Image (cartoon, rainbow, N blue to C red):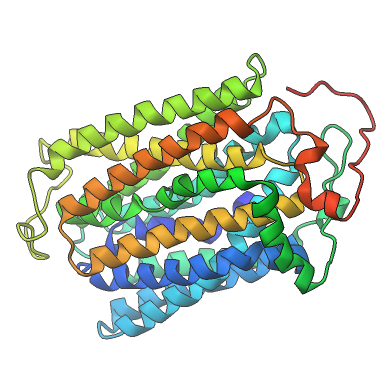
Length: 439
């Protein structure tokens, strides 16, 4: 059910954003809206772990769904009234607030419900369901606009209806205290502490587990690369039909990418957890440099000035198209593997839902700060090559900083000493009702 919340809300957002410019001919309004979205997201996500621990993940998840319907509706509005750009930008800023709560609750629930040996699987299952939302949305936009040059109102209306359904799903979900893990233990239920103690936990998490700081560059990169992929590649080079097909291929590849690395690498029981961590990191390095070297040879052939908004763009029948869509597929694989590894590394640091809520808040805050910066750079017409090179450098830096964190912090088993926020309240870990071998 957690996956279906994100299938219907962030999934529709991804389907729209993946079209480049939200499906609009002029991508500037979309870039400004996304910059506002990620700026507010970055601020509120830093504290969203505190809110999650205070009011509980189920209520936090419900609160987080509310901004998506307004955001989708704003694109319908601008498709009808072209001067509604300010409404789209304001809706983006509001979505940043609510999305911070949704993704923090998601991270806390997904990682705390899994046993140590299941975290990669749980992330993979969630990522597959979540990205099916973008796949379905992309299929709808491709079918409705196959013979069109602009995105029709029907596409936005369909996205809006699906998003409104997503708002209702958290109301039907069970509370965390009623859940039981497969090894007989229960997730640590939120403690309902005071606001003061929860804000103190932000500092406590950093002070007691400073290795999380080495993951911040990886977090920063995790939404930074979307701008070049969607606006500076997909929107810049392709017509609306090709953009829709690229979008479908991109999100479909994410489903396979998350399962490949989550189930077959990060949860591979024949390897120790430290070995799995280094293996996942090595796969990211290889894929990162493969796709960026490939993309560099395309980026050399065009600039922002050389492709005006009304230029004739590449269609699916163009002989150059197959190679270009394969690049989108490999970028989708990289994205899903990057996000899965980042969440898995967070999960390897603790099993405590409260600590994971704080760390998830850090993750989404830092990644949104990166996205806010790069979307704004795109909105002010920064050269495509500059954005591409900065993306490549930031992704490489994220991998470089993650390596010492894996070496120094990832253990074969999470110990009680890692549960910093539980120790503060002197809560003993739940006893296992039946012994099951872990990792």
